[in-house]
Amino acid sequence: RLLRVVNALPKGPWRAAGELAFFGMELDAHGGFAPFDEGDGAPVRSRPAPQHSVSWKRRCELFRKQVPTFSAPFKGSEIAVVEHPDEVAYCRCRLRTDLLAEDPGVGVYVEVEVLRNADNLSLAVVDFEGGGCSSVTFSPETGAVLRERKVREAPRAIEGTYIHLLSAAPAGRRFEGTMGLYLRDGHLAFFRRWSGASTQAAAE
Image (tube, helix red, strand yellow):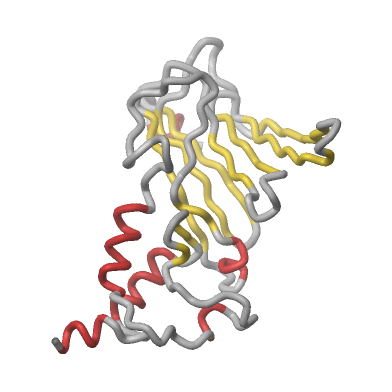
């Protein structure tokens, strides 16, 4: 019973461990790690703890299992079959830039391992809080980063800019390896590592 009481403490060890591991992340159906009420205007870490009992140990386990998974129609942490061309797979983990801005120096890294690839793929971040009107996309095959913004709905108009930061793959080679993104202090960086190559040559 004492352990359950400690587990539910607003400043207990499980909440501290969870905030350290999952700060700046949010699940699509469960919100952020610390389920505070919105709208009081206070910084996240200075808001009062919720009055209802929270099992921080269970919340840590929930985030540990579900953060590295995909949203419907895909399930789990692996995608083995893609039925439609141009399919989009969304991560269940969302990044909260507003929370990260309150704690400079704290960042979030997201990584995806590609074991088999029959077509082109890319890694993108979409601003859903802004209505999904802007995005930043990284192509591990071309080494390019594309930034797009919808400026008009009807007639539809999109403006974009792109930059080639890494060398492109040989024609016909599909990306297999590891790709990731790192968000910190308002800056976004992308990473790729080709499989089957030396460590120095593969990681960029």
